Image 1 (cartoon, rainbow, N blue to C red):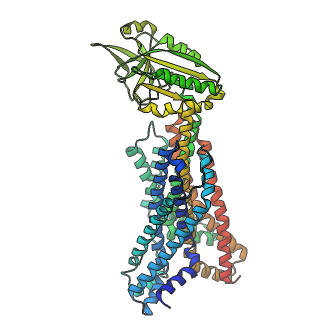
Image 2 (tube, one colour):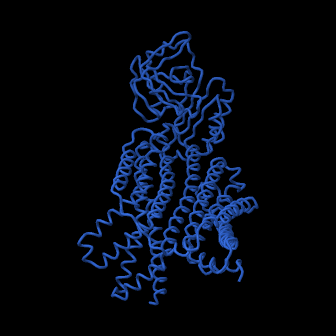
Image 3 (cartoon, helix red, strand yellow):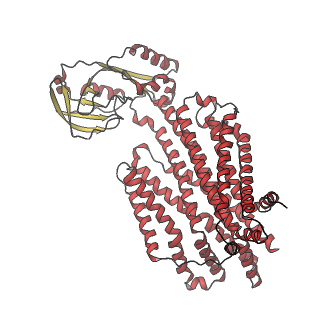
Length: 631
């Protein structure tokens, strides 16, 4: 038997151990392939979601590739430790280091190649279903079936390079180890240190401070001062929570008389204590991977509430502002009117002139009198507002960051100062244009101060019946796309904006869901691998316990409790992390609506998936144990 045959037999006979590695790698290849097929689809390349869709899918490809590289490297190192004894025996039998390196290279490359072929095959098989689902999800027409060489080459080429590089460096993980070390490494007894009280307190302090800082955050989140600090604290706290705090807790529990008096309970607790000490890093990785999955999917699910509540940020459904120098005003208005008539919308129209002035708020500021402002509010179904003399109502546009208490109007060589009476983020005339900084409402009595300034801009608003606001999505969408680049006009159709925002967020939700599913599968594979790493030891221990009187029902109870602890503890901690993150998100964007429903749906879906996985894992593991024990 040569080394190629030996490598093939090792993969084939130990496939139960390699199974989770193969499934996770294949799943990553499949998701990567589906993203590539979507990214290169001609209907996406020319559609309204072209820019955001391609950028989001490209980002997903990069994340999947980097994560897959780290996962494969970690898994290979773990598998080599499991096979240390076998490598030592091969060395004793005369295998040269070069032959062992070639065997390890072939084994990993075979697994990688099989993962690529299987994963890409599944991607092609599911591509039509993926096109149908993603097209509906993104409010697009049904995407036609598409097949091209570009996504195939990108996917298979990327992962071929990944597995080739990892396979080339795999042998160097064991290169410097002596024969005696290889023979004893997989079976040498593990010596665990007791929990250190200092690090237990570090776990409590970092998690407590990280949580409190996230929950009681004020205003907007600062990326450096808040986000990175909170993530760092929670990450450190989570690591010490598993490696120190839980071990400390189990040490106290094991000493209690109630545990010692119950044999089954004592075996369960001691087994969990041992697994915590041995697998603390795995539980930590599972928790962080699940937290990222929950937060990424949950965030974009929650943002959907912003799209649904977008109407509350726009007093009127259709707004057109013609700025000085606009030669296409009549052309644009004809286009808007034709769209309104075509869709049979019920509406109230209002238009008027408005001054454009330079102020301390912004270079381009809209200025309106209080009387005309209240007429506009009447059309919008709102109560009139009394503007005091010497004061202004300040309506911030999207690009304005002014924080002062007074506003200075620049008229000729002099300036007129006014006190800000109130502030609001929802302007009665929405200028969805970065060139317009803000809108100010001045008392009628004060407007004479600006008599020398002629109103040189014109606005049109259409207040559409509430039940029809989403139907404005076909009203001049081409104007909406160009308004951010125009210096001559600003146009907003709430229906068009709703569709654009919804499509953009749906793309990001689709991408985050695909990446999140990979993270979830990877977390499950970590647990599966760790279970079967200690499988032979578990068989020996349970065989001895059966001989001294442990019943079959007690055995099932102990295994079920231990499996449940390992499967659900990282999930629960990840859910707590995610819930704190969502409390922060809710605090920051409370005006956008309540996101509790979205959070509950996301966490509920993952919980159901974990329960299904746990039921399958328990049946599978119990079946293997019974078969190995001859039951």
